Image (cartoon, rainbow, N blue to C red; front, side, top):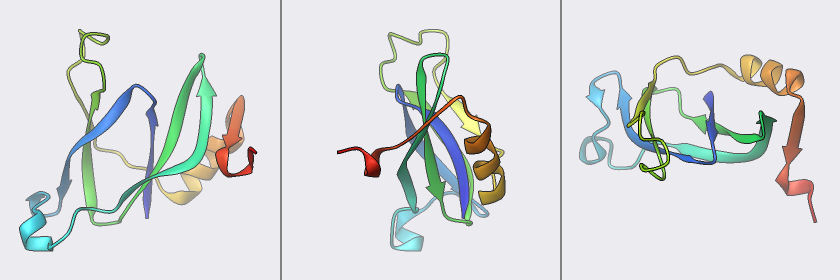
Length: 103
């Protein structure tokens, strides 16, 4: 698995794999992309940890409110991180929260 962090105010767009843009007809499914229950907080912004399958090479992310981020229309995440890198980042975080433990 691979991982990345994404702000509350952003969403996942298109996905690329080794052959190019993810083709749901060829794969007969959507790519595995899951927002986990962990987030870190930096500069008063929640950054959620996402998990993607190894086949995914690149993920496009876009702001949920295009008017709020007028200067940025989309970002390509080309350097997805490993589980070890995600754990290291979680350990370095100022604030870490696991929502499955909050009642």
